[in-house]
Length: 122
Image (cartoon, rainbow, N blue to C red; front, side, top):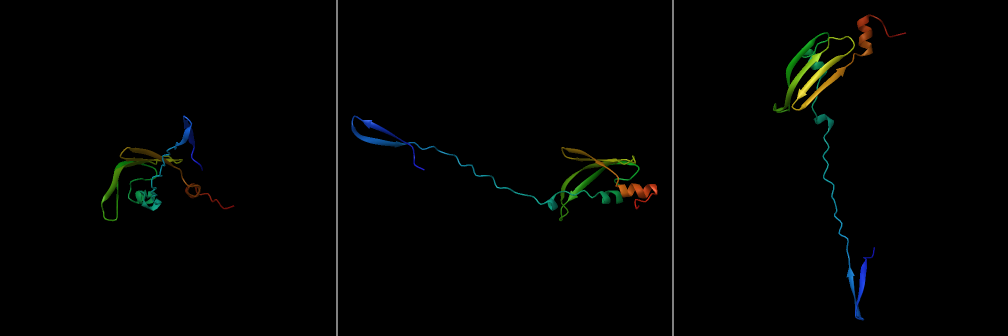
């Protein structure tokens, strides 16, 4: 692509070519780092139930909870409580630092059928 120029005459003597360049700032994208899902924090509901931190039919907590790496160093810690008294849904409350989240749990239809004594097979 040719550069734009401005030709100016100086009293009939030769022409001076002045080129104007548009300076463009090139923005290089910042390097991306993707974290694998396997590297994130895990919350094993079944393990919480086996340890009594959550229990169907009752309200539990708050209980201290922490995540550790393979060296046994604490990654993060927080609080967990649950209200599973309802037959239709349950609430699991997690606090980690500034994160304050409530998760609603719903019973599995197969679990409801087994609890009521009816069969889902027809």
